[in-house]
Amino acid sequence: MHAQDKGGILPALSLLLIAVAMVSPSQAAYKLQERYSWNQLDFAFPSARLKEQALASGDYIPTNALPVGVEHFGNRLFVTVPRWRDGIPATLTYINMDHSVTGSPELIPYPDWRANTAGDCANSITTAYRIKVDECGRLWVLDTGTVGIGNTTTNPCPYAINIFDLTTNTRIRRYELPAADTNPNTFIANIAVDIGKNCDDAFAYFADELGYGLISYSWELNKSWRFSAHSYFFPDPLRGDFNVAGINFQWGEEGIFGMSLTPIRSDGYRTLYFSPLASHRQFAVSTRILRDETRTEDSYHDFVALDERGPNAHTTSRVMSDDGVELFNLIDQNAVGCWHSSMPYSPQSHGIVDRDDVGLVFPADVKIDENKNVWVLSDRMPVFLLSDLDYSDTNFRIYTAPLATLIENTVCDLRNNAYGPPNTVSIPKQAAPGHSAVGPPLYTTTNQYRSLLSQKPQTSWGPSLPSRNYLPALNGNPGIPGSRNNLNNLGAPGQVVSSVSVSTNTVGPSGIEVPKAYVFNQHNGLNYETSGPHLFPTLQPAPSQLGGGLKTYVNARQSGWWLHQQQG
Image 1 (spheres, rainbow, N blue to C red):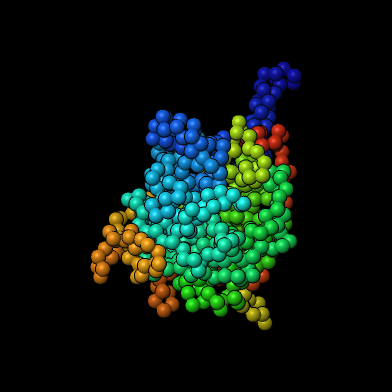
Image 2: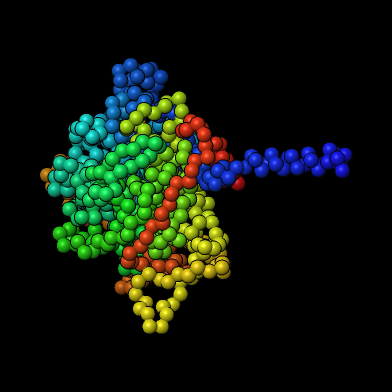
């Protein structure tokens, strides 16, 4: 027997044990794949000489730059860098993904260097945070007009919405928020963009984190209005304590912050979900209210409060796919979570799609792009603000993965309940006799798996869009010079202007166009219009299996799945 082992069985067993050891549980759990990373940010200066001059003059201080926002469109990945400290040469930048497939690329100012000049209010962007590309190929950027952070903040420029056409790389509108829409405490970092029946039927919503308000802007009217002082916009005084990367700190004044929009409901409107940063609750309101300027003072009861999500559940960024899957960062847990909006808020209907106590320290921004790929930017922000980053270590990372891969085998994947008991969810049951059918659909735990549902119909928009004009605003912005100056090339007065319509495939009640995603989910027994109290699961971070603190990092994220896609 010993001779036989020496000849074949033991070597084979050894190879098997080595293979098993190489695939550790922590590595196998990773779904997000690292695409780009930096120890410190670098910028694509026109020449080496100009870069040296910027370094010498203090116009470029690499260790003062922190990325906070990400957005993808076509072959470009946009990254925003606020001017919190001196030495930030550009705030709105992008990566040319054709030239830089991975690695630590230089950030290219968008649309050019001049448009990133701090303090040039009418022509440039001073500081950008979160940005959004809509279905019509437009990039929405709110310029806060600020330099500095906290007590060092100055306001050389007013808040202004800048909208770019990504097919021509030109700014097609700039709109300054009027004084009535802000207050001395205003700080706006987040934006949500709502496209209705066509590209002209567009609204943007802005969360005023420290001024405690919600601002609506209409593209067609070129006008904005503010919902103020709703108690749901304020921080929870019991939820201002944070623990991230071993640092305890208090952000007790942080109000309404992260926002996401559902697909269009049967009434033609969406639901906006939002959370204050210093809170564990989620709130909701219909865009029917937000789109109506006359409802700013009498809409208190149209806002809905959901239950607390549980401990360690602060979130700053959220996004929802066109088939109802919401992703959000969990900054206390170094994780990204998920919830399907057709499901009630309950421990069984929330999941964690990825967690990493090194690579996902403060996952600052989460986005879903036009190809249903997810992008996550992590930046160790509390360490940057409250301590000192180690610039010999990797500090900033951008991860990506297909949405279907992230939610696979989680409770958020309603196409295929392969995750099994105890989180298997069946088709909604009919209300039992004697019970009201009002409220969320009933779900039961079962051992029977639902067959795989057909794929959601694809929307028609993508990186390549037909040329088009946009509807000129009905009125300018009174009292703001130049509010219509950028519309001169958008068509003469009275001219019929065409737009690209959002993909639809049926007509609902009262002739309202209903998107394919809504029809798809209704056909499969899902409902976006549930309401009532919900409960978020109590999710505790798993103990880290990694030694050596933040400097230790596994390579499981670097499989390069996108390369296989390109080759295929």
